[in-house]
Structure formats: C-alpha cells, structure tokens
Length: 315
Image (cartoon, rainbow, N blue to C red):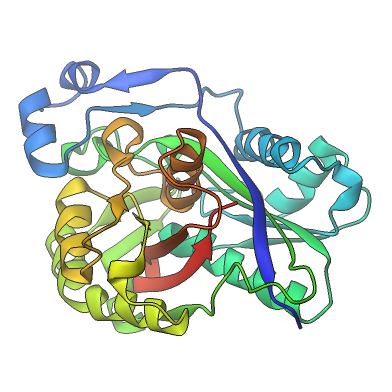
C-alpha cells in the first residue's frame, strides 16, 4: 500500500489539421466566430483508416518508451473512451494486441470527458491494492466520427487524439505520486452532454454545461487539492478537460492556482474528450513547462455530468 506514481507520459495526434478557415467552407461559421466563442484555432482529424485503438496504441507506445519499459512489463491496460464502435473486443484488448502486451487485465472506461481521470484513479487503486504492478492508462477518442458536421455549434469543437500514462507502484518509503481522487456526478443533468442515436452523434446543452463548470466545479477542484495536502497556490500547473477556452480560463481563475501554468491545448487540438487531459499534460512535460516532481492538478468533467480530479507529481 505504498501508493502509485506516473512513470512516464506520451501522446499522439493524427497528421491532418482542420483549421477554422476549412470549417468556414463546410458550415456557416468563420474564424472570428469560433475563436470568440470557444478559443479554438485548429484541431486534428483522424482518417477512416485510423481507428481509436490505433490512436491509443501510438500514445501508449510513446509512454512505454519514455518509461524505459517493454509491453511485457505491463499487467493492466485501461482505455478511457466514449467513441468505441464495437462492443467487443474492447479498446483495451485491441491496444494490448497492437502493442504485444502478453496477458493484461484489459478494461475500457466510458466516462466521456472525465474518462482519463477516472481511469487514472482506477489504476492507482488497483496498484495500491496489489492487483497490478504496472498499468497503461490511456485516454483516446475519435470525436470526428460522432460529430454532426452540419451543426456549427458542436462540429467546431471536436478533435481526435490520444494521451497515455504508465502508472507503477512507488518505491518503499516514497511519497505517493498520485493523490486521492475527488469524483462524482450529477445524474439528473446527464443529458446535457450526450453521444446518442444511430448513428451516434455528439450534442450538448452548451449554456447549462458552462454554468455548471464555472460555478460548481471550482470548490470541487479545491477539494481535490486538499486531498493531496496542498492548496491551489502550491500547484505548478492545472490541466482541466480541454472543453472550451471560455470554460477553462474562468474555471482556472476561480480555483485560485495563482502560480500555476494553465494548459490551453484546446486552442490547437480542440475538444478531444477523454484524450484531452493526458494529451495536454504530456505536451507540458515534453515542452519542459513542468519539471519532475512538480504537483499538477488534473481535473476532468463533462458527460453524465461526471467529474474526477487528482493531484499528480510530474514524471
């Protein structure tokens, strides 16, 4: 019961970039309209031959390489996604097969935009309990496949990508690198963000989500810091679900992390749902914006209206 830590992270995005100008040729919108409302400039879009498990496997392979590990070192694979097309085999099993992980427990976690932080907490609990030694935790979504490309209020938001983390037990005597999770949901408002129908399409009640996120979530994020024995001013960075810059900025300000870098990857990646937090976090690590051991708040929110947050130490 020594606790767990993130040993390494990695991310992946498809090569194709869709700009606001491109979107203006598809629906009634403009670069100014999009930037002023959601702050997004570009997003990456996967092709028809790039399924969710391929995006996930690329990110996971980078995290494994950064940790200096092989697929044989992993005994748990968790994939957070809400855009899996098939019911079985699940994304985790498909990723394990792509990577050559020999015999892992393989589970998908569908908590939409808060999926990665839920999966990270699950991996932490599993390693703490001794049921796994090392886990791959991946957030991956292909939101372009569930977008309504005729609805300018939602299609301008979405992007595709994946982010991954290797979670392992802390050495004896070391402080935990993943703090206790603060999680929950508002089921009666679950319909405010949805991916429903045949074919499945993403839709949301934007104003309801904005009010909930900017008023109800700041005290919850502060509670997540308390569970780590910190106050928001101690944080080196804040990585919120990259939903919309007009949600991220006021939410981060209300949390009170006055010394923290605030991830704004949404401007170039769009809303990648479960991928957004690990994608943005991995970029901060790669760019050297945060250093090994720095405390970073990860806080996911969205579909179901679910939320989950924890403070992690940078690998």
